[in-house]
Each structure stands twice: as structure tokens, then as C-alpha cells.
Image (cartoon, rainbow, N blue to C red; front, side, top):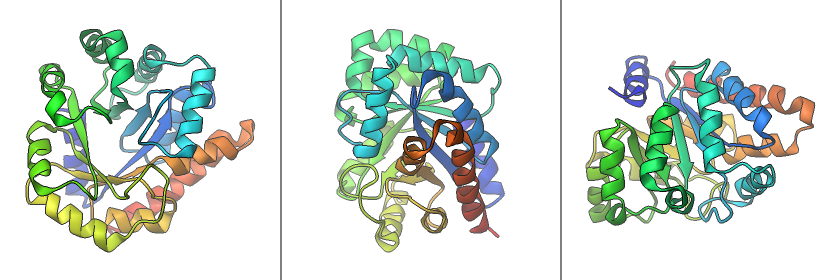
Length: 268
């Protein structure tokens, strides 16, 4: 059983939703990435989503785009991201680790090579934003063979027939994008998200994580009450961007702690 599935089952017994923070590998620097990952876990992360820097991150808003730009200036690419994951695994064997990225870097190093590398790094799941289900069947099969979850995105505009197609290939969890547009844009309409989550649940028993637009503890709490996991990305990356170097980790810890308290309070 995958670490992702085990984590969700443990949290379900406690009537809690997972907290899944996102950071970009190599931002603000490669030397700080693993320290940030450890800080996230110490302050409530149930899983970590680690972004692979890419020059054209079409699903990401300005905040995460700038994080990718900073990481690329630091010469962090896909192989460096996997090396950072391996470094994290030296001291943390339990926290599920999910890579989020785009097809181009994966295809540049070769799918087979990519899967070998992430297997060695003990990666638990992969989100490939621009691999539609029609084009990712073989990729998914190869990941499944290595017991690595294939996590797919669903959006407010995803129609029922397409949901059925996606859930046939997905494993680990389904990632519902709560907003039309890119990460960090707009405010979440909780009622609309709730309706969409319930609709997705008609077609799959997989846990549903909700992300894009979770900016504060109040929103995190509301999202946790209608989903199995809350993904927080742009808000954390913005904290990294705006903090003085010496304050980055303390500020991220404080932010994570406030989000965790809010999410856990929804099960009280």
C-alpha cells in the first residue's frame, strides 16, 4: 500500500483532512529546499508537493512562476529536484512526497529514466499538469508498475464524461482545482467547490484534495470541511519570496502552523 493511501486512511480514522503544502525546488536556493521541507513537516504537513522548476509553467500564477524563475537561475532542473528529494529522504522516510511538473522536462530526460530516478528517490506520486489522460496511459502504466501514484487535476469546467475517463487512470488522490485560471488567482466559492467535490465523489472513491486560492486559515478550514486534503501553494511561495533570508523558515513555520490548527479544528 502506498504511503499516500496509508496517510489518508490514518487521517480518515481521526476525521481529519490532510495538509499538503507546495514549494518549488531550488527556491529560494537549493541549499534551503530540504530545510524548508523539514520545516513543513515539523509544522503539520501530511504530504509535500515539490515543484519541478520549468520555464513555461502554464498552470501557475505569477507567484509560482517567479519561484520557477528563481530556481532556474539557481540552475535547478528536474534531476536536481530529484536529488533534493533524495536528500530529504535521508532523514524522512515516512512523509509522502509528490512531484509536480510538466511533460517537457520529463520527456527531455526520457520517461524511463525519469521513473528510475524517482523510484530511487522514493517519490510517492507524480502530478504532470499537461499530460492529458488520453496521452498518458503508458506513462501511468509504468508508474503503476513501480507503485508510484498518478495524480490528475480536475477543474470547475471538467465535464462528467471526462471525470469518468480521468478516474480510471488516477491513483493516490484526485486534485480538484478550485478556480478557473492559474494558481493564486481569485477567491474560492466554497459552495461551488462543495458541489463539484460531491459530483466527483459519484465517480470515484479516491480522496479529493482541493487547491488553488487557499490563502488564509479561514479558507483552509472551510476547504478542509468539504474535502480530504487542502493544498497550499502560492501563499507559502509568496511568504518565501517576501521574507528576509533569515526569516524565511521561521515565517513559513508560523504560516504552516496557523493553517494546520485551522484545518484540524474542523474535525473538533
